[in-house]
Length: 170
Length: 170
Image 1 (cartoon, rainbow over the protein chains, first blue to last red):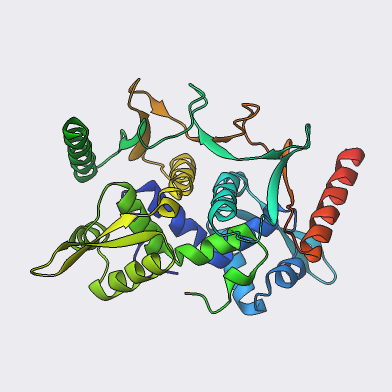
Image 2: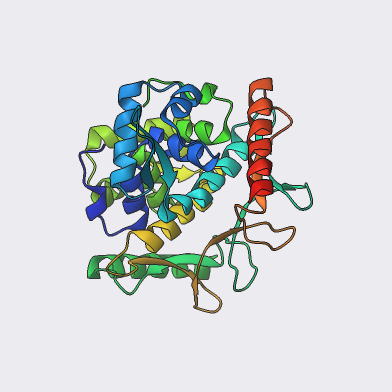
């Protein structure tokens, strides 16, 4: 974990990063989204040490992304199941997948997303469901939300002004 | 950086994580997507130590996500500009933003995405541009791609079989 307290930052990206902790956590969430639930399977698929895996699973349970469920009493054994918040991490995983396939797969794609109805490969794309537009730097911009502190509000305003000036000059 | 070599994993998610290195790198990419380019601005906005910032900027340049550009010769000063691969990281940032806003903003949203044409708040959503369908666990599944090694192909096949069996039983 970072020493810096990301959860205190007035930024939903920083807070999200605070929850997933570090790379191992993201790869464990990937395993869960592939349907794995058990310690042994995580360990085998990730090549992670048992100590590190136990710590990361505890963190993910504490963060509310995984739920621990006892599936055997003798011997006592737990499995790990995605919570609603854990399930909702899937778009982040798929955005990473799409980015990796586009830029870091010189030998071709090793994993793709498929539409189970048509069988076609899908390019998962961030869009606005209200307009059907692909999210695009020119059209969609971040802005202060209702709970933004004054410093965030000022910063977003300066960004918008700087951008408007650049567009007027172009 | 991790000691484990994520870039060797047959997984585009792991390779993507290998490129962005760690949380600071993601927050620096966030700053760049906000239009910041300069060392001083990154340092001020992130509260990161100069040493750590210099290391992370070097890593991001080496990973091909940022380009270093000299903007002053006397004194010598560089700025950092997103490459195409760096720009293409934006959907990952916005997926983290949406996830954070949904689950970790009990006091309300501090940052939102807006449509600059309508002024409306946008819910950035992962969709299939070919069908217009929202990416959904029931319909869209990961599968082996053309460059998948045998082990990945077998694993994806087992996952699909296990899932089909579960659906048939339900």
